[in-house]
Length: 499
Ligand code: BGC
Image 1 (cartoon, rainbow, N blue to C red):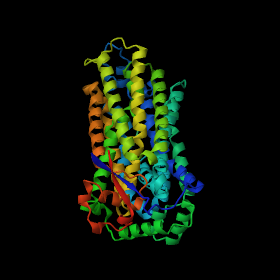
Image 2: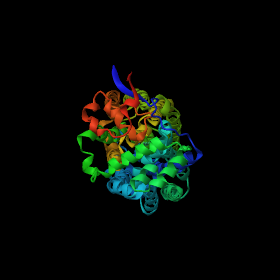
Image 3: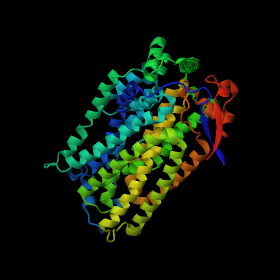
Image 4: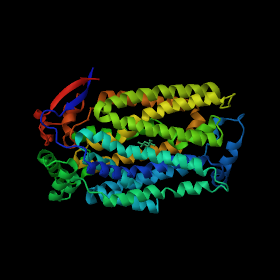
């Protein structure tokens, strides 16, 4: 079945550029914006499973979860207030990301990241600015054939942030006197400082420099990050994209035009699907979930450290393969593995906890098998929907709608992150093991969606991605010939690949 489009830029359109030390270091520093995000994700679940924290702030949940295994385990942690503690962060990020697109357009990506770092020091509210800028920054800086690898640095930092948070929770939980949770929460200032200072030494992207009228600086920057003098063709593409962008007064209403329908669809559906994989159930609530299936406090936090390790490892797999295998193969393989793992986890929980939620002799071995399948699931997410959920949106928007498009992606992501953080514990209480089947159903839908509707974008220069839509079996109807101003469709060699 011919559904995927592979673009080979071998027909003279491959812009020269190599992995220079400069571009590597720049992307590494910019990626550190992901650390704050990851730390936030990882820290709250552990803190909310600590007895000292619960007894102080959520005494009723504390009492409820101390009840023995003869009660309904699914509902041990059911408290809207408790989930609000976790979800409020994403609500705040969602609101701030509405502003962020204007900020990143006017002041450039670099200063937006700086602003993201500074304001996180004051509170997490403006963290959205960093999230709006980092993936775009990375995709604009990277040479096309290495874009996946360099962009996934962001996801790598998110996962390192999560892993660090899991480890720190494991350590602080055992602090005598019960103030460990303060250390866990307070240490969030460290990743904030890293991106604040880091962004001061970062150069701005050529695209963003041209967009703001600094043409010579943009050329110099392009030479530096590509490690060659031969930047003429790429520079021309960037200027054409920027001219097009300047003719657009209102990127927000613009993105609603018919010709941007493919990008708009992806900007909304990709982050929505990413969250509907159910990953944050594990990331936020792994320790709580592990306690629910019968682990003690320490074992629960230790298991969260294991899932944290798996997610970092899985991200490396993605870094190594994304520009070779392409985005689609990772999405399709990852989706299938997640689907199977979720069905197994749901079934294993159903067999032991049934509908009543009363645990019947859950042995250590049994619980460990559940953790093992959770790890298969987490690993698959780590090389598919995790990194690609940020990479793909950041590389598909033409410059004129890029900031607005990214803002939509971040907002949708934050909204669904919020929603899942908020409703998971109640949903577990009501849907029981069926919750895992619910997410499995979504994974099946999104995997089919990718198979039919997402074209391959690997190695295509970012300002020429429109050509990929133009050749797609479905999306081509939305784009007329007059809409294509960059690149030369004739010079680009396309072939339809059998999926
Ligand atoms: C997602 C987060 C998730 C994280 C896990 C990110 O790409 O946006 O919601 O917690 O991956 O690694």
